[in-house]
Image (cartoon, rainbow, N blue to C red; front, side, top):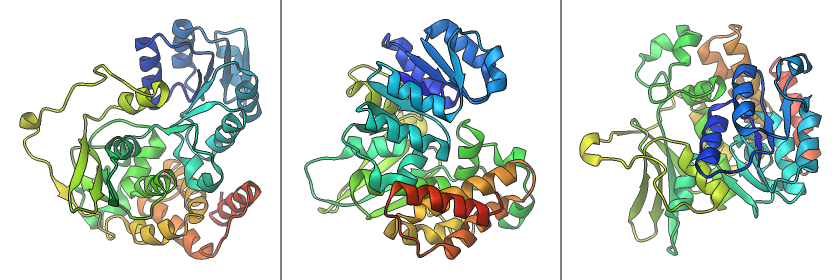
Length: 355
């Protein structure tokens, strides 16, 4: 396979699955973590490596190293691998997704931005999402009439903070997720609840429905619920590990234990909460976005700019959602008719947000 984003949490877990099932890694693509990349090269012996920056090439212990976006697209097109795992973070992941589909490869997609901004142009016939929530929804689908679908959220770093303290929280506090350790951007997106809107947009494209909502489940053991017309609901319960959805996305089916089963007696209590707009102001735009999925481009571009500014200390935490909300107001009438429109609007939104 080709693994895009090998040194991130999804990439590391993908390599654990590759090791477990003796899967061949033809290409590794990574960003700045060259130390970990070199360890991965030593263990998995890829034929080709791509890094983010030309200056890092000399640091990579491999004879066949290139860099940058065009190099990623070239290795997808010229490789013999039939599977591409796209675990890149951000808008950067869109072109590789489109290229992999164009080349007829199977796409195991962890880059949520691809569907968020370009869902209407992505052929899903050979695509499997790598996400606990969407995997859970898929796992629960039966031959019954569905009323609606619900995914869960952890509540993020500030779910228990006093509201009045949020304007002064630090970057370190924002990156301290209560349930697990993820990359910086997704951790901030979890704290603002923007990540959950992204997942609802993805679900709308993946399952062709707008009957979607999310709730907070504090232990992150229930990932998804399907509500049927007959009034019953089924829930997908599993310990929080990305290896289960990764294994299914790559292998198609799994018939052995991937993760430790949930012991409900040990869990004892599961607690659910409503996602409140005063704590997560972006949530007030949830229904508007689901009913006009083109707004995914606006939310993604504005959020990438805002999160970048927050992580570099230029703005406060509450400003992250504020920047996105202003962009959603400004660009609320957009209509996307082509891939070119996506790149144009993305550029306009970033400029508006002061990128």
